[in-house]
Image 1: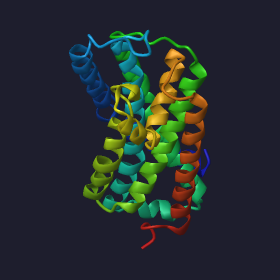
Image 2 (image 1 turned 90 degrees about the horizontal axis):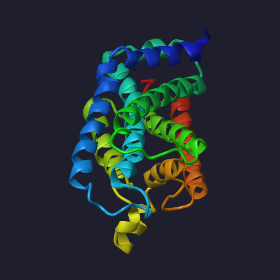
Image 3 (image 1 turned 30 degrees about the vertical axis):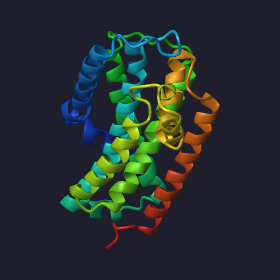
Image 4 (image 1 turned 45 degrees about the vertical axis):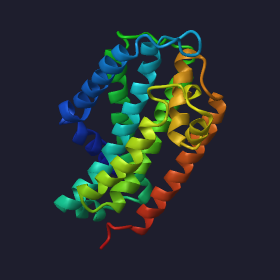
Length: 251
């Protein structure tokens, strides 16, 4: 293996060694959401006129788990390396900023998809969403995980302790995830909040992902793909620039 492959392997192994915490716990959390919301709101009218609420909830929970765990993987890895002081060993290697980016974001995609698959397997028994367009499911899962992996990389570079990373997680990632239509269709919201939802890039990730299951969504999947793709390019360019200049890692 060359340099970036070794770093990628190390990052994947890092979360896999504690898989009960990094994969099992998020799956359990998603099951609890399904049990609570699926039971309380089981009498809701059909979504899109044909989809039960339980089936509607499955893709939302899957994508929410993918996004949150992709972010957590890259951000926690960098902050942990800073605190423990072993980041210096990576700085001594001839790895370029591109190698760092591929390894950290790549491992985030692997963790996000692993958790998402696990969530799908255990929640699909509560409601079967179908597979109207599998290519859209895969596209938005990978793009969403890469986007949040890149965002986690930026957060990890900026933060110098876990408290700072928690601010990023609790005040940016969590609110944008929960207000993106995971538990509801935005057409059920008043016009003002529908407009606000359209300003949230997380909404397009989840709505496009949901289209792959039902063949129906709140907005065009092509629009969602364009917005998610543009956001990914912006986040990736920012992360690569920060890595290139050694932002907060070359003191």
